[in-house]
Structure formats: C-alpha cells, structure tokens
Amino acid sequence: MSTLTHAPAPTEADVRRALDAVLDPELDQPVTDLGFVRSVALDGGRVEVHLRLPTSFCSPNFAYLMASDSKDALAALPGVTHVVVELDDHHDSAIINAGLAADAGYRGTFRHEAEEDLDELRETFRRKAHTAAMERALTALLRERPDLPEAELAGIHLWDLPGDATTAALLRRRAAVGLSNAADALVLVDHDGVGYAPEQVPLALRRARSTRISVDGNAHFCRGLLRTRYPGSEKDQSPLKEHTP
Image (cartoon, rainbow, N blue to C red; front, side, top):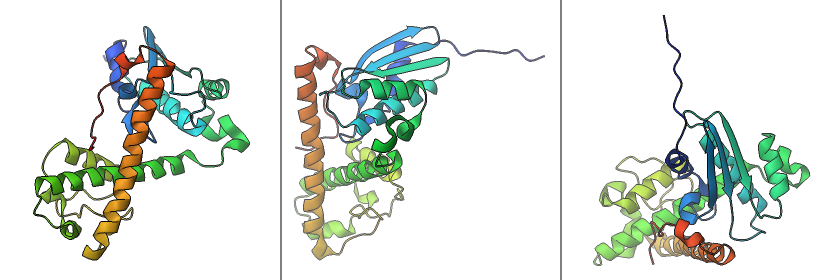
C-alpha cells in the first residue's frame, strides 16, 4: 500500500534561492543580487513576492520577463501550492500584475503592444551576455599572460582558460546560447560559433569590450537608481560579480 507524501512548505531561504536563477535580461544579474526583490510573504504553500525596479519607466517587456520568470521559478519549488508575483510602482504595474494573475502570457498581457516575442528578447540578451562574458575571460587571460599577442586570441580554446569563476560564467553563457563547451572549442567566436582570423581579432575584441562595458555600466547605474528610489535597498544588493574594470 503506497503512502501519499507531501513536500514541506518552502522557507524564505528556499524562495530567495529560487529567485537567484531569475536574471535581469539587460544587466545579466540575478534580481536578488540587484535588490529587486522587495518582499517575500509565506503562508504554508502560498508564496507572495513583490518586485521593485530602479524607475517607474523601466522597459515593460523587461519588467514582465523578470516577473514572469520569478513566478515560474517559484511555482517549480517543492511544497508550493500557489504563487503571487506582483510588480510595484511601475507605470504598467496594473497591466503586468493582471496578466501574471491570469497566466495570460506576454502577448495576452500586452496584446497589440507586444511587438517582439519574449523568446526573441531572451535570445538577444543571452547573446549580449555571452559576448560580455567572452570579453571578460579573454581580457583576464591577456592580463595573466602579458606576452600573449592579441592576435593569438583567435586560437585560444576553452582548455587554455583557467578554471576560475570568470571561465565558469563564460561556460554558462555559452550553454545558454547553444555553443559547445568542449575543451577544444574556440573562445573568441561570433553568435554562430564561428571563429575569427588573427587579423580580425582587434576589431572583434573591441566590439565585445564595448558590449561588456555597456552591460557593466548599466548595472552600476541601475543599482544606484534603486538605492535613490528606495532608501535602504542597498542592504538587499549583493556585490557586483564577474566584473572586469
């Protein structure tokens, strides 16, 4: 005779760990590290989370994506029976929260205003995140090996990188965009995984560096805006990770 068992109700620590996997698509950082999680309330298996953003006019599609991903991450937690995720103080809060509550999806929520599919949006920012991670890894390698000519980065493979956090971050980003993580895979590649000739390296690296600087700069800016908008929110922000000055 089988016995039906139920998972215990989640704790706040469980909830926040689940939200660690939810990224701001533009900043490529967890909403928990950024301080975007305003509150967590638990009642048995019922979970209610409120999110906040640096400004009231943050892009609605980014805002919806983070809120929707948060709801999905929490719904997958063992012991969770009901999830409410609400976005506070945004000019489209009412629309986004109603769409989330109804499980209407992005297009069902914004209807004719949903010009771009969320999957396309995700792919765009996954590619940017990979480009930034690739630049961080190669710049770190150049600093570690000052005798390495920049042009020789065309022949650098994953096996040439150190087994550190920067490399681990690059591997995650490569997997997210469908690139091989085989040890003999080239590091400096375009979005299709195609490498560059040595003479193409300087321009490719400059473009990647521009992307990385944009991502890191936006992250610093948004963190500061959040602290200004919500005094005391700095205590909810974690130090920047995977950052190369």
